[in-house]
Picture (cartoon, rainbow, N blue to C red):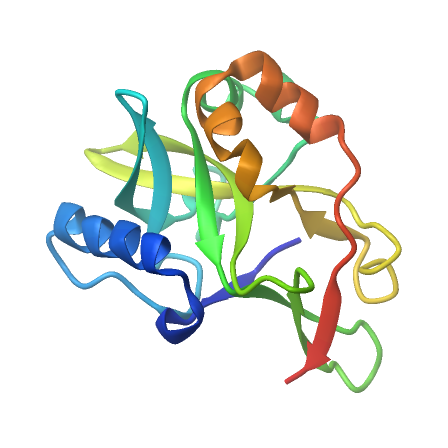
Length: 190
């Protein structure tokens, strides 16, 4: 599960800051940085003409069955679900973050920030679609690895920065990425 994430500008690389500024321009309104919540307009990375570009998208597909939005899709079943199938094959994005949040399931309900060790930026695998003229994205999740399992049984699919182009441009490679083990993360109580 991934219900909130962070995007702190002072911790991002100069290249990522440029892509975030691109997304700001594409969105036509203020994109959210800091702690990102579902339904926020936030930057995502897409491939356009062989280049990595930043664009603004709203986090969450409309939930046609009831109120609210769908913010995550299970990577194991996304290719079989009508809502996600075509997006997984044709409309993938990378969600830049400086970490994501999860809460313990005990009485304390402690909030934790998860990050990749030795890196200020963490890219999450996403897919997007257009609903009533508005581009929206969801974050793909997978079974939690040992660094996450004590807090939650699901975690976002994490992309290696070296694999961003492959994830965005090659459907076969993207499906391979979904089957790979996730990197070990570090957590900090917040």
